Picture 1 (cartoon, one colour):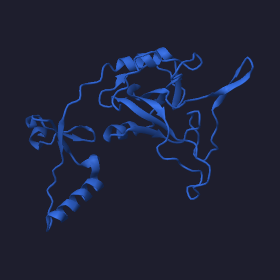
Picture 2 (tube, helix red, strand yellow):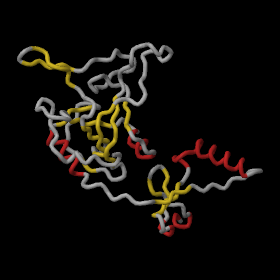
Picture 3 (spheres, rainbow, N blue to C red):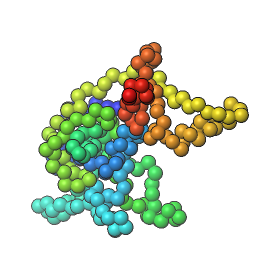
Picture 4 (spheres, rainbow, N blue to C red):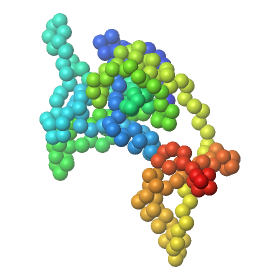
Length: 236
């Protein structure tokens, strides 16, 4: 499932309480990343520059390992995000919840030496597979204390954040179009120029027109992921 994870409303165990899916996390999007994630659909969120425990590290620094805790019989297993852990994705100014997901493995394995496929795997990639997106309608998360790009969350806090999103909206068919007047000598050349314009201008400059299937009169224009008025007479 890509739009909702039906398990997020169930019991979520914090690390140390036992049970499957032990541990939940808050991930804070870097500056500017919210707009990028809202503009183009992605199945995963990949953050770089983090150590194995999800903490930020300076560029070029030696990757640090997960933080180990000390138990009654000595050091315990490292504490940090594990594959499958639930994640709340947040954006700042103001702090708000924009997505839910789970810790996933990187889709492409990077190497310490990109020119040597036998070199050790590189650290610093933290990947979240989205299970629920709410970039267009985020919910407030004020009062949540974060201590870095990745913060451990108590079970009750994660569950409360997930419940704030409510049930996912019903999916329906839409018609999306992009119309460009192009001068060319042949139809094939016009198509090539079309794709060149799409590649060079992209969603930052080109308006996409969307309407519910069967209701073209309700068509809206979107630029930069938000509704945009394309009627110059209405601007006057």
